[in-house]
Length: 264
Image 1 (cartoon, rainbow, N blue to C red):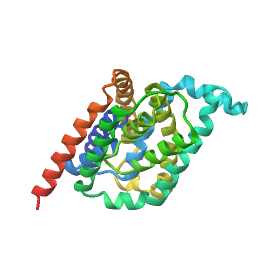
Image 2: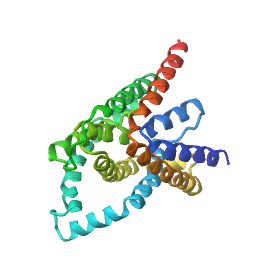
Image 3: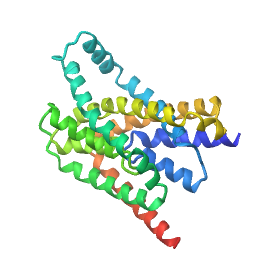
Image 4: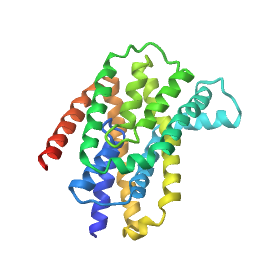
């Protein structure tokens, strides 16, 4: 029962923070640190399955059209043009994850570097309001830059959705297109991270006492809460209030630094 309660809490945290631009990984690390909700990194990644399902549902029409274009090798339609762009964006994400994933996992066990990452994330969010939205066209260079930004978000405290959308806005991409591309680009990233982590750490779930009941509960809560937050993010983005999340990241980062330094 104790493990079930922990996984429910982690699932809710994942759902709340994955699509809002405030870093789900950073919040999961904080929950595990301050609330003693210890779980292997594999479980954190599995929780992303719930929020991945949200994206598959929310963008089901676009995904269906993308898959149809891929089968027909039609890269001239709007959805067809997204296919090579997603591939280009996914490459730097994968390279950064493979090269620095283990180092980041080791280096960010303490709260202080996570706090600094929240401050950096807030800065990205704040300056996103200075972007001059002028195009729906995403170039290959822009896709590579956004993909690199997504790769950097393996750092706990730097939001994936927040950073990729912010960078897209700064590149002059209109918010509707930035929103869609950011979330579609997350699909191969989540699938890749899940596959790699399962391959490396498949035995850790059993040793941590996490069975199918806990996994199902965590994924379900992450999915239900995540669906609400992705709709909320869209409304906030449309109203051009996206940058206001910077205040939350700055306040949280500052509070964590104070807490970390007060220990010494």
